[in-house]
Image (tube, rainbow, N blue to C red):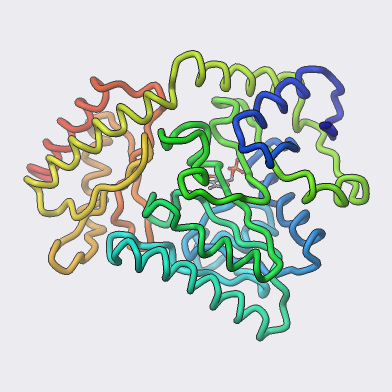
Length: 352
Ligand SMILES: Cc1ncc(COP(=O)(O)O)c(C=O)c1O
């Protein structure tokens, strides 16, 4: 049974909500719609605090979750002049390049437990752990698979909720699954979605478990004038249909593998490429000055990004050391497009 909270009562939003929730594990059966990812995360905080009675939030060290006052408080990538909230704790992203697979997973869980302990020591009850499931702004860490599990167990044991932010990795981009969290075998309490959801049309939302919204729904007044409007519902539906009909998740998987293989070959020729990682069409390439000690080379990274820009290819840099090439092309990216990128990168690396 779906409750709608939009000002526009129409069948389209019910149809869209059902089509969207059908792409999630069964337990995530409810949806609420907003206009931006920031609003979706803002609503997630309100719900988490209502459900848990806590206020504490744990996020990663360079996370970006949005622009509202509440969400900026746990978006440390906004920089040092934007204050983190007193009830916010940050943990390092799981750095699979500098730690073994086992260590990466274990350390992330341990760091979340330490953050929970610190919140409690300050008299703050944890409300939620929020993670972008591929750590987009933290440097793109796709694995090891299952890495979120110990951290999610920790927040659940502490009475908090787990919010998977799928605003960047969602909608088939990671290739193996429609949603990034599925690759880690975890069960989020809420999932926030946005960005590609309307393929340019501003729409976003939360998909959540019925028990999470059961009390908040009837007791806390929430409406969103434009969230879930008829145009948004039609745009969202068209996106889901196109992903399915054109096999874009499979394309992300196949072209992503092809591109990663090509990047792997380049790394054999250019020692500055320290690591190639990612899933589907969400790829990170870590640029180092000395692969033996994995020392970040932010200056070279910027030269590569700008060199590609001069060749009319737009990528960006991510991560705490600003040395990870962030490659996140449209899901219709083809092998020919990948070859064009690889050739240009080869060219730029020859004379950066
Ligand atoms: C992971 C993540 N969450 C949330 C947001 C916020 O979405 P919006 O810009 O639609 O408010 C962004 C935007 O870049 C994002 O990357």
